[in-house]
Image 1 (cartoon, helix red, strand yellow):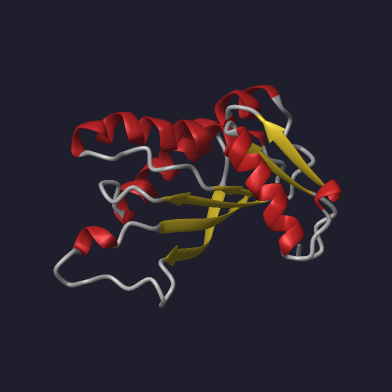
Image 2 (cartoon, helix red, strand yellow):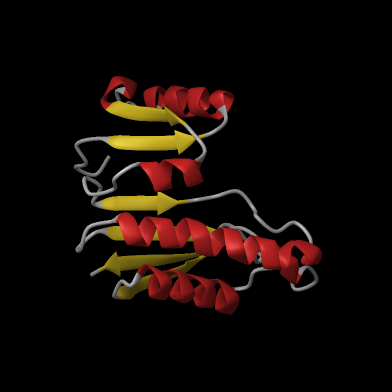
Length: 155
């Protein structure tokens, strides 16, 4: 795992946690050296201290599956990022993602900016990511371009 002493997975779905455990083993990693935390991530972020984490990957499910869910989805993205940014120690890294095509790259960046401002933290964008080259998008289906991520440094 790139030199990490431990990786924790927070997931509300027990079958998904079991799949994660199996995938680690299939890829040659020792699942016993990883934490599998069955919890709602919002509850986890409110209750747990993130001071021991040097890197967090936020990869939530699509919060917005239709245009009418856009405001609620933005609130969800802002909350999850605010809680994470506010809880991480200075010098930590955050890879935060959205797979909602109704939340475009510009809006996602704005939501993360608002989350950082509300958390009262100085945050730097290190990299912006979109879909990999093998995840092609048809010119006739621009909605297929839905994956976006920001790699951030929390200061």
